[in-house]
Length: 103
Image (tube, rainbow, N blue to C red):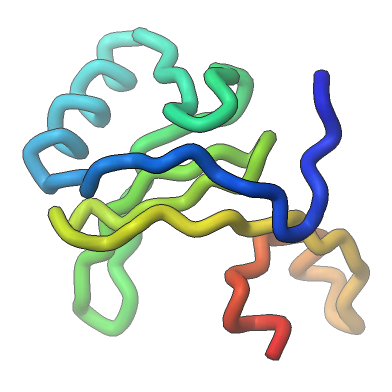
């Protein structure tokens, strides 16, 4: 498996729509593994949803290469990377960082 470096280039990808997210999510619920459109890995690639302060967020992400894209129909994908650390309260051991987290 290749090692992905910070700032590694990403292949061009079209926008990801809410309808595509629905299809991916249903496929996962039926037991079908999804493959990352960038690195092609199916190890930890998922259609994910979160509710934050009443707002719904849908996106697709790969923890292997850091591919992340909102299911909004217009956003380009971004590359995140894993930050492994130990917080004082031990609740957060590692999470993917978005590029704006490092500024």
